Length: 167
Image (tube, rainbow, N blue to C red; front, side):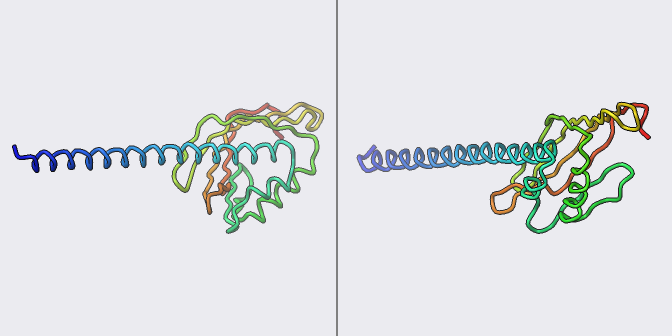
């Protein structure tokens, strides 16, 4: 083999290695971005939950989408379609000091621009019409990313089981 052939083979090998390194580096950067996005998604959802647990309407308002999109579905309650309606519902609910919520995130899927999460929640009212009342629920949340910030755009709850004195 001629020396020029060796040089060409060596050059091709070097370029091939650089391409592999660049591809590996891009994959690692994408994985790091996804990991950071996942953390930000969960941090936003935890802030939303804490705002609800603590009846903090100002903090809750910070989680709402700037485009006004928000859907809330609850049993025996009209569907809410806007952030303003969602905040008004919570503003009224937060005035009632008799209830407590607790819960934890049990599952999530975080995409590029939209993510979902499932939260197991327990709603307790120590004295509802003279009796203790509780409701164990599952709540699905949808969050949408706008300009690298996550916002809650859907909140849908269903009862799994509740105390017998639900009236």
